[in-house]
Length: 165
Image (cartoon, rainbow, N blue to C red; front, top):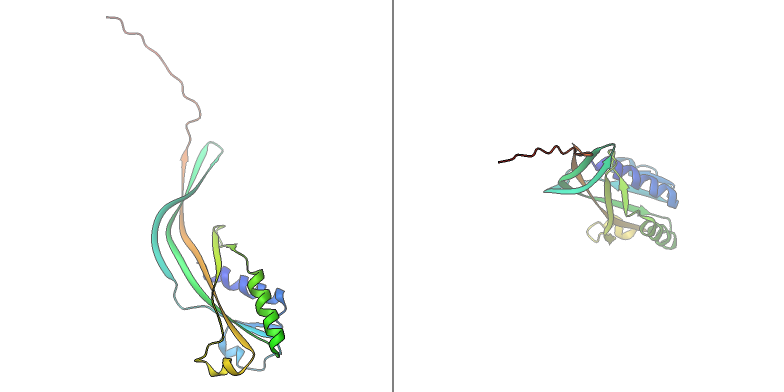
C-alpha cells in the first residue's frame, strides 16, 4: 500500500541528489558498483495499528465526503549511501537528509508522512564500517482509508397546519 510510493520516491530522491546508481536488490548491489551508489531496502512487513478516526470531510456538489482512517501503517526503509571518499559521503548524506520531503502522496492521493530514523554506520556490519558508507533509516507513516458520501440537505420546505380546538 505505501511500500511502492515510498520506494519510488526514495529512488528518485537519491538520483536527484547525485547518486550515480540506486539499487533496490542487495544482490545487484554486490556486483560492479560505481564510485557513488545507494541501496534502498524495504522491510518484508509493515506495522498496522487500528485507528478508526475521521480525517477530513469535503462539501462538493450537494454531497459531503468523509474520509476515515481505519488503520495506520508504519514502514521503516533503510537507505545505504556509499561514496569513494568521506567528504563526498558527507555531502550526499546531508543532501539526502535535508532534501527529504515531509509528505508524499500514495496511489489514492492520501498523505504519507516521512521522517528520519536512526543513521550512521552499522558497527555489526564490518563491510560498512571499513568503507565510506552510511545507513539512514526513513520512517514512513500512511494509512488505510475509507470514504463515505452523504447527501447534504440544501433546502427545507416547511408546511404549517393550524389546528384549532
